[in-house]
Structures are given as C-alpha cells and as structure tokens.
Length: 131
Image (cartoon, rainbow, N blue to C red; front, top):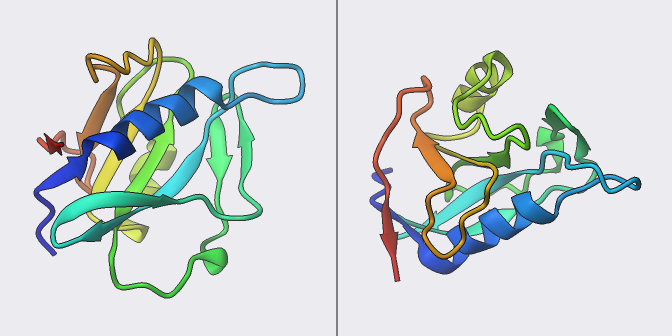
C-alpha cells in the first residue's frame, strides 16, 4: 500500500483531539487511534473502545480493531510536545501499519506545524497534506 498523503481536515481533527484530550482533572493525556486510507490518502481515524490513556501512554486493544484492509497506520499525541517516537512507539508501529503520526503542543492547527510522520521503523517521512 503506497500512502501519498493525508486529508487536511483529518489532520486538523487529529490536532484538535490532541489539544482536547484530558482526564477527569483536566490534565492532558494521550489519545491513540488507527489511520485508514482510501486510494492512498489517509482520510479517517478509528478510535477504539476500551483505549486507556495517561499523560505518557495510550493503550489500545487491537482485538477491537475492525477487520479492514485499509489500515494505513496509527496516530497519537505526545502531550509533552516531544514529536519523536518513544521506545514503546517503536514496538507498536510495526504492528499497526506503515504510516504513523504524532501530534503535540502547541497544536498549531492553522499552520499545521505540530505534527510529524514516521515509518514503521521510526524513520521520519514526508506526507503531503491534501485539501
């Protein structure tokens, strides 16, 4: 599967998700979901039931993932603003597709500067924003 881009509205939604993910006390927490593609363009995110989140983790239950051959990868937030894969990310990435997006503060939605994209091995990769 050759992924060439991401829908701009979805990327904005990912930034909003990161900015608005918090626990009961209002502290920022990670969100995590799976990116879906159509014709090589990432255009949807699945947020799985049962996902647990904290300030430095998000645990997803892969058994809740629909059987769909259009999974491109994953998206999650790093509330600490470090837009690089963690050790846990590098273990998770190969299990969940080829394109992985991390968003974080300051969640620049207009300029779309608060995100990075990585391949399954954690190597930075380019991803065109479409729309």
